[in-house]
Length: 187
Image 1 (spheres, rainbow, N blue to C red):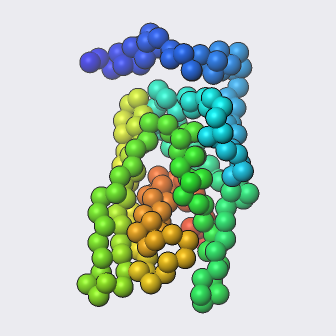
Image 2 (cartoon, helix red, strand yellow; image 1 turned 180 degrees about the vertical axis):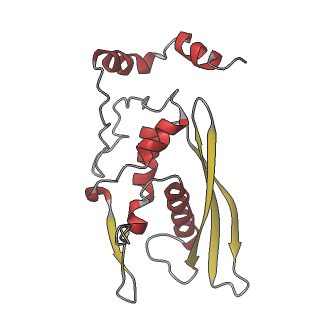
Image 3 (tube, rainbow, N blue to C red; image 1 turned 90 degrees about the vertical axis):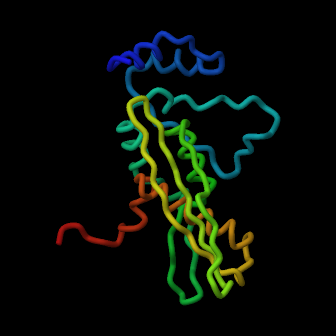
């Protein structure tokens, strides 16, 4: 297919019925607006019709990555204190999932492997996140490990998967600022 042919086809393709109100709104305003993330208290499954996100559909990958690299609002960041007293900031996996759904609705993810340590005391999960743009796609993988003895807040495999998912998304730029916010780049 000739360069640009896919983009022309996408422009000529009929717009799905759910997306029409969004498309009309987008055409009315020339200035792009930031989508508002639902709060943690919002119940998207309360029986009402939920509009499908359309912002990232049919966008170049560079635009999707640019949106994901933006700083996540502090109101969505949680802090967990480790046993040694060290505080760790993180974005809950379900918030990361919502951000991906808004900015990169064509993303996909998969667990690549689940491996228990030889002594059976920990489990590691490898997770892959793939972003799809109209011009390219990109994959990033990461690992997460959890102690089998730690059963607070879900089972160890779920914890390791959530950690691996967040880390894979950070490799795409989402929430990456949390990993280096205390570092000075001026040195």
